[in-house]
Structure formats: structure tokens, C-alpha cells
Image (cartoon, rainbow, N blue to C red; front, side, top):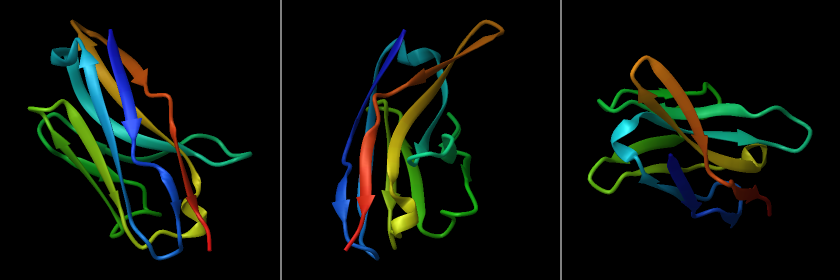
Length: 119
């Protein structure tokens, strides 16, 4: 089992910055990829960014150039640095970890942290 705890959400003005953190615990050795997803009211959950165990990253087009995902394997923590925030970025942000056991993969999710971009 993997447990994920997010922190760092809050209220920020348009153009501002926030950094989200997600600390993993439990069977962390099984984790391969980690990432961030978000869900705005009335919308489906969508991918924001992912980072593999080797450091390869992937971003949604809507956040490219504004958000940066990073991973500290020693601390079992993944970060999302968000800059030039827009009201459209308002959502609950969820941390995700993919764990692999043999040939099977399992998804784990954090509880979510609210990010509100508003003046």
C-alpha cells in the first residue's frame, strides 16, 4: 500500500505562484511514476503533469511553460511548481502514484488540495 499526503494549496491572485508537495509513504519502493491531476467543479479529472522514476516528464498543453513537476526520490516526494496562475487553474489538485507489483500496476491517490486563483 502507498499513502499520499498533499500540501501547499490555497488562494492566490492571477499571475501568482504556488508550490504543491506530495509525500509518499508505505511501500514506496514499488512506485514507478508519480503525477498531479486536477478536477474543477463540473468537470472530469484531468492530467496536469507526470514524472517517471527516471525523471522523464509529461505536461498537459494547458500548463506547459507555466508548471514544473519534480521528484525527490530520497524524500519520496513529488512537487508541482505553478507559476503565472490563471483562474482556469482553479481546481482540486490530486497527487497520483503508480505502483508496480510484478506485471500488475496499481493507482494510488491523495486526498486532494484546493487551489483557487482569484482576485
